Amino acid sequence: MSERRATILVVDDHPANVKALRVELTADGHDVIEATNGYEAVEAVERDAPDLVLLDIMMPGATGLEILEKIREMDDRKSTPVVILTAKGQDADREAAFSLGADDFLTKPFSPKKLLARIHEIIEGD
Image (cartoon, rainbow, N blue to C red; front, side):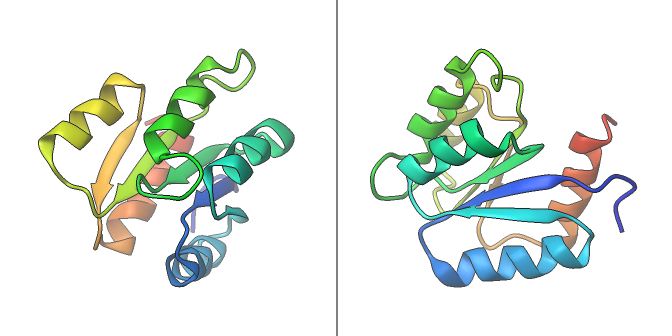
């Protein structure tokens, strides 16, 4: 279990992905907020001030990259860590995500153990 309990926003338009992440994250001691599209994600970041955002790229409403850009433009939320979780693993996607300020980029399918380890590193400042 993590040293520090975090509030994590999971943004994905596939309910099965959200459920799987919720199970892993809550078992690790975290609180989970969910959003299924870009508009909900931006509202949740503004309203709930999550400690970390797990963000899919391909979604209705606004892409994950557009959401990332909006988060980085928010004065009081721009330093919120964002990890991209996506099936889009091309170099161009990775480069775009990092150029917009992503903290990490993991392609689906990913190892839940690796994801949790990365979350711990980010929220604990390692």
